[in-house]
Amino acid sequence: MRAGVVLGVGKGFYNTSSYGIEVVERDVKLRALPKGFDGLKVALLSDTHSSITVTKKLLRESALAVMSKKPDLILLGGDYVTGATKFLSTSVGEFNKKHLDKLTAAFSVLKAPMGIYAVLGNHDMWDGEAAARIIVDEFAKKLGAVFLRNESVELKKGLDIKKGNEKITLIGIDDYWSNGSIMNLTKKADKGSVRILLSHNPDINEEIDLLGERIDLVLSGHTHGGQVNVPLLGAPYLPSKFGQKYKAGLVRDGLRQTYITRGVGTLMLPVRFGAPPEVTVLTLRQA
Image (cartoon, rainbow, N blue to C red):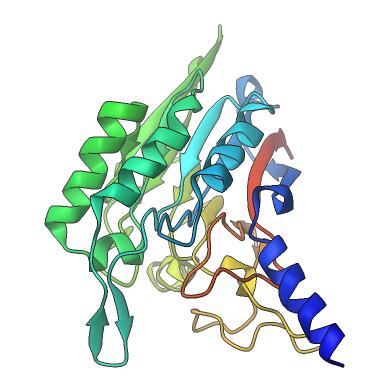
C-alpha cells in the first residue's frame, strides 16, 4: 500500500516534467473553411503558470515541441504566470516579473508564418491591469505576440481569383471571469467568414449561446484537464460551471466545436494525475 502511494506521487510529479509533455495532434473540420486554409496548422499553448514550481526546462520543452510541428499560426491561451489566486473571499499571492522573464526566455523559439496571437487568463487579470500590461508589453517585445483584448483580426492566406483574398476571423477576449466578452465583436466580423474564438475559459460558451452568436471554433485552456483525476470518478474539482463537460479535448455544441487543452503548467501543487502537460496542434480541414 505504502509503495503504491509513493509510486503514485512519483508518477504525478513525473507528469509535470518535460518528459511528460504530450503533443496532441488533431484534425478539426470546419464548415465554410476557405480552400486556402485547408491544412492550416494551429498550435495552442496555454496555462504555463510560470512559478517557482514550474521549471524553465518544462516551458522550453513545450515551446520546442510546438516548433517541431512547424505550425502556421501559434495561439497562446493565458495564465502565463501564477501570481494572485482567489481563495474564498481573499486574494493570495502576487505577480513576480522574474517568472515572466523565465517564460519569455523559454518561449523565445516560438515563430510562425502567420504570427503569434494571445489572450489573458484569470490569473493574469487577477494580478491587476498594471501586471497585465507588463505581460502584454513583454510578449510583444520579446516574442512579437499580438494580444487580442476583446477584439478581432482578419487572417488572410492564399489568393482565389474568384473570391479575392481568403480569410478567417480570429476573435480574442480577456478572461471570461473578468471582463472578457464577445458582445459586439461578432457583428464586426464578415458574416460568411469562419470565426475562431480564443478564450482562456471555455465557459464562454454560455455567453455565445445566450447571445445567439455564431462561433465555429472555440480554443481554450483553464481547466488543466482536471490536473488531478481519480480513477472512475474523474476530476474532483474543475473550475467550470459545466462540470466535467469542458475538462479537455474536443467538445461539440451543435455546429460549434470547442477544443480545451490541458495546458503546460500546474497550479498550487506541481502534480498531475491522468492529465499530463499538453501542447496542441490542430489542423483545420474543410468539412
